[in-house]
Length: 304
Image 1 (cartoon, rainbow, N blue to C red):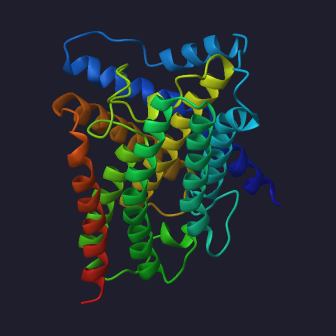
Image 2: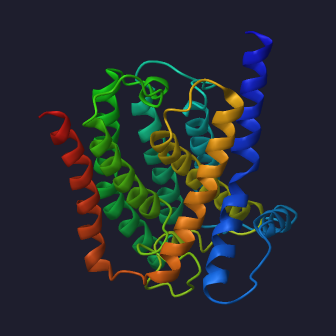
Image 3: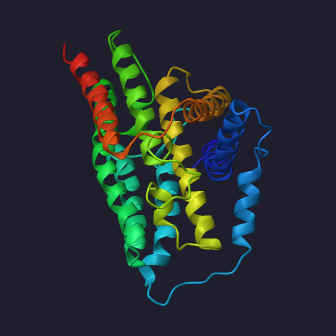
């Protein structure tokens, strides 16, 4: 391993592990601006995490190790997915077929989160877990179809090759636009954002993700919140990587473009949550099916 590779890996780890809460701060600041309020500072999510991690832990006697493993698995799977995502043509972990692992890491983290919710024996958390699994079964095909479009263009199942760009045909632009739109919908669904869920609600009958972590507190809740922010950061970085794939191999330009793109995605999420209301649960599958169709049309356009 050369010194340049080591520095790139350290920069990759630092950005993906330290900046995710800042993305939530930008979203909250954007929503506050739309509401005519000053809003909390962009660094408020860091203060919240520090406060939670300084607290003690209380666990119900009816729970097992599964309940404790849920937050840990959420952070670990999102962190491993971050290592697979290339920036400037380089990723700390890269191999042929890593795109499949990338998609299933989120499924694994979701499985442990739902299992931790079911382990409490709470009817409300079981209801949230059922909703999470139902909606994710429709969001995953949209993600896979999007990866298939990139794989078809790059002739590879490695994220490094998929996000490297290259001499792709002109008709690829339309497919990539559809993929970016579909993945943005998937990002909102996977992170339980409006219009799929409201991260600020406290009404158990309407919650999805928040109701699954009602019994978590202290450091465990801090791990849940950090894992959610890291997952949002990684999926947003994937969208930015697809949209800005022609940046060359210069790491300074690539990192600057990535951070600028992530800021734009965070502002876009804040705008969506400010101008839209949450969908009724019966209408959520229709939007996820639409995301699947967008990705599928991207494949059809390449087959012409």
